[in-house]
Length: 324
Ligand SMILES: Nc1ncnc2c1ncn2[C@@H]1O[C@H](COP(=O)(O)OP(=O)(O)OP(=O)(O)O)[C@@H](O)[C@H]1O
Image (cartoon, rainbow, N blue to C red):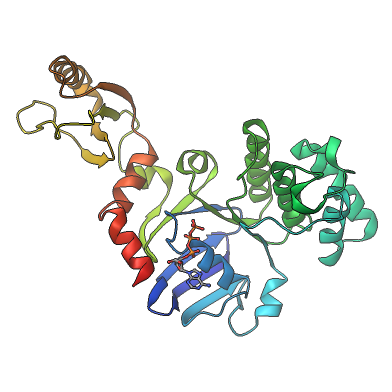
């Protein structure tokens, strides 16, 4: 079995009375992409910041490639690179210089750093901007090109552990796909990747494992298939509820939902494939009786499972957690 490049155990970090990380344990193995999912304020950035030594934990341990990152943060930092959620400061630099510098700082020869910048520009399709200078106040380079440059800076020297905090923010759909491919390629070449994201659907395509955080705690962990907890053939019936009116009564129907979840004005119901016909007949009846506006039937997704894991309480209590 591949070695752990990141092992976090019992990690706890408080800000005043807010427990931002509450006894979190997780591992990232070499060659593996682990997605860290969670709503705003779940504690994802707090965890990433502790791994790279920007914050000290109140309790628990962090090992990066076997090195105690709490006792020896400077040593551990040599083995990990973080792309933070905030845009990297690069005013006055071109993407080429920024990527080369990031590689040089981490020990690449100037020749290797030059070649790496050119290779990454090709891989991420940012060639036309490679020699354009970033100017203050977002001028010169767009947010997406800055974000891609930050990604290239992070992966330039191929450290064994990569942590990426929302790396696809601001990036257009086609380059987002290039970034996901580039990331997967790094893992296939042996890097361990911790991918912090809100985007469950995109993450599902490239991650091997997922850890779901809610209010500082791990509320789910496993492969996408394990977390989905459904068979590939299961279906999701989505009912769009009218602005006025209650929830349709599920007790009187022959459909036996595997999972049922209300998200705003949507009611998400997971049903086995063999019940698809009765589910459609039932939903059509509800629509005809004006109890719902419309419905849709599609394959069950990881998003349904994620929402079920993180919606045990309403957002008001989540805000409460943030303020307590
Ligand atoms: N420096 C800080 N001082 C005080 N509270 C903080 C600090 N950093 C984080 N918090 C609080 O800790 C909790 C977790 O925040 P964190 O930024 O780790 O969440 P997150 O999952 O990364 O959220 P997002 O997806 O919005 O980036 C929140 O309640 C936040 O307000």
